[in-house]
Length: 127
Image (cartoon, helix red, strand yellow):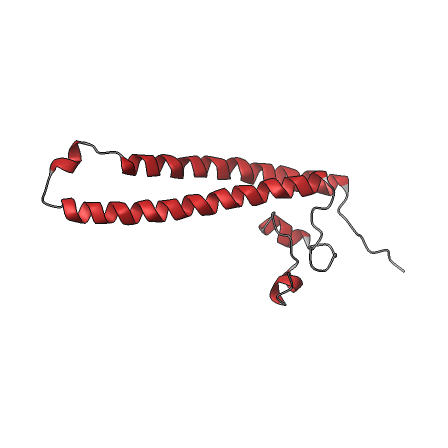
């Protein structure tokens, strides 16, 4: 009878750690770009002196600032999830479904490295 794995090996965890660190680096860069974009939208420059399209530009700027803010919030949350995944790697609990206690498939973890639920648990609404 085959033994069921209860956790990923240290080598597998290292592979996931490298994947997560790569995604984390990119996510942080993207987040900083979004934050700089928001700051840029706050500034006034000499292009604001033309009254012709000023009303339209202000409306678009507010909408764009809100959208950019929401994207920045989502990116910040993604960064937090990736950092939490790194903690689970250090604790050697990474890849274990929090609803079923079974291993999450490698394919899912490669696609969503911060996942804490297996596909079955997510689809069945288990939390």
